[in-house]
Length: 192
Ligand code: GRF
Image 1 (cartoon, helix red, strand yellow):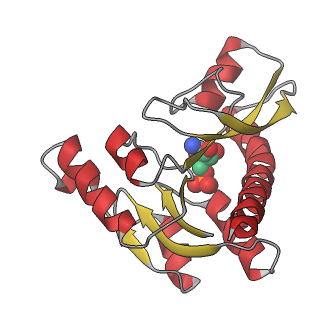
Image 2: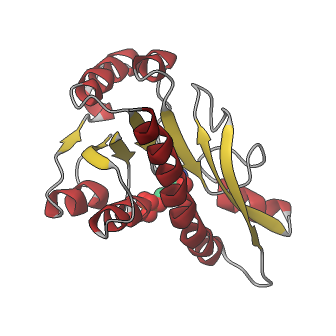
């Protein structure tokens, strides 16, 4: 199963995928890693691991439609079976998702449909919920919407900060992303 991973930041979830592949524990081929802006550590660490990388800089295009078209063309060149949004902080168009047969996987640091958006951890903390967590789902063109594949809960502790909570969620999120990809790869390889 070929995947293209999209990142906007540090890419620690991506690193968990790279590590699992390197360890022989995850039967996927990371065809490429791409970002929506230059200078991300996610792209840097992928290049260091010998993975092809690309940047389709959102700010370099006149509008969202032009950026979406460029992103679609760039990702399609790697012929992925699944595209993974792993801390990719841009909403893609329905056309992008259709181009990959709807196989656009997203990971989110909250228990969807609660707390979608860019600040899922902060919003859960501010609301005062006692349990939050993470979600891996097939993404549609909405904000963190689409069929849920896997979720895991994380209890919120007293005195928690957004940073400490996000770090604890990400420990679970990395594991959930890798195990979800492993299940999808097993199903994909079984079909071949
Ligand atoms: C993850 O929690 C992801 O769900 C969220 O941003 C974080 C990205 O972390 N959207 P990293 O770049 O994988 O370290």
